[in-house]
Image 1 (spheres, rainbow, N blue to C red):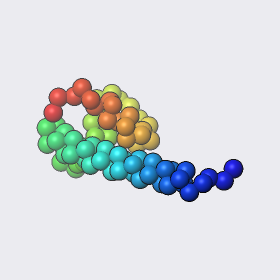
Image 2: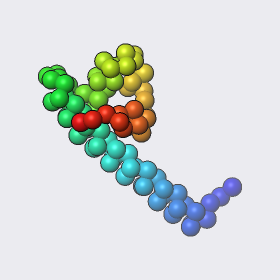
Image 3: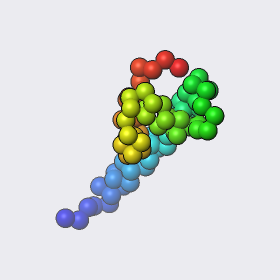
Image 4: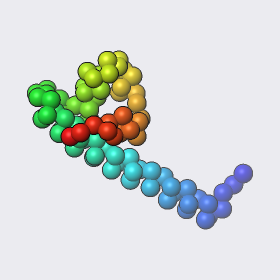
Length: 83
């Protein structure tokens, strides 16, 4: 089934919005990771890696599983943390 021009434009907008959300979420998690690294005294990791390391240490989750998580799931897991 072919999409008309309006449907294609809407799809492009949705993809752009999703990319913007992902970029914003990545930036927020990076800042959160930097705060975590400082608070926890991490010397070798920062940004998203610090977030991953924190989740591995706190919940004893496997590194592979943590790295496979979607960004919004990682954000959800950290929502109630006090930074």
